[in-house]
Amino acid sequence: MWRLIAGAVMISFSAVFVELVSVPPATSAFYRMLFGGLILCAIVAWRGERLRLKPAALAACGLAAVFFALDLSFWHRSILYVGPGVATLLANFQVFLLAAAGVIVFRERLTWFQMVSIPLAILGLVLLVGFDWASFSAGYKTGVILGLITAGCYAGYILTLRRVRVAEIAGSSFVTMMAVSLMTAVLLALAMWPEHASFAIPSWKDAGWLVCYGVFGQVLGWVLISSGIHKVRASQVGLVLLLQPVCAFVWDVTIFNRRFTAVEIVGALLALAAIYLGSVRRTLKPSA
Image (cartoon, rainbow, N blue to C red; front, side, top):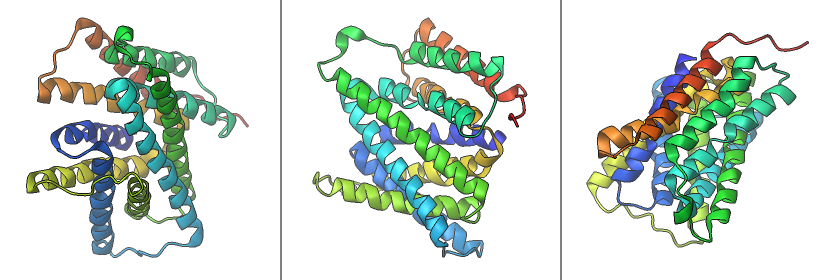
């Protein structure tokens, strides 16, 4: 469990690096995957692990990469319509999808604590992000749809990654995330090409931030998550990953001096309490 928590905290810094670099979000997402994948490739080589994957592992990692590339693409487009806060909130509706998958696919039985904690966590995020209905444009409905599609892609990515780790078909977490990261980078590059998006990095400072983005977002964040994801129930994974938007709010306040309200603080505390209830409490064994 601690690896999931640490990984969620690491990927919460993603918004910080996106804010610090002066490149479009799609470009920063591409370099996050590219630099992260190359660093993981070096780590795998240093550890003496095999760089060649069997067809089953390549197919599974490829499917995870497709889900992750779609997740990032839809999320960035949702941001254009509803802003980063609401887009992130909508993406984290993955918690409901993962809970449903846990019950239907993996035959997990939810406790009362989990059934209460999931909606409580979403309520906390709603209070944390806030909904200024008057400010939404006519494209709001489009942004909501894109955000919910993001949640579906995010859930698909997590479930596929969990399956790869449970089956142990791709070696260590380093090998798994190396393959997924590089494949995702290729897919994002292909998506950027017809849109004539720029691959240029304006300065060495931006290059440094992008490398840090790859280190925190992929090398540290998702390696930690992938190393512990197969040991935790699907419903718990979704709840723990809600730490990402909560921590992102904290970094926004502490690093960028964002002003906050009492309602936002209550929302953050509610979300943290819900994550604690759903993740730390012991759950019932799966049904036979």
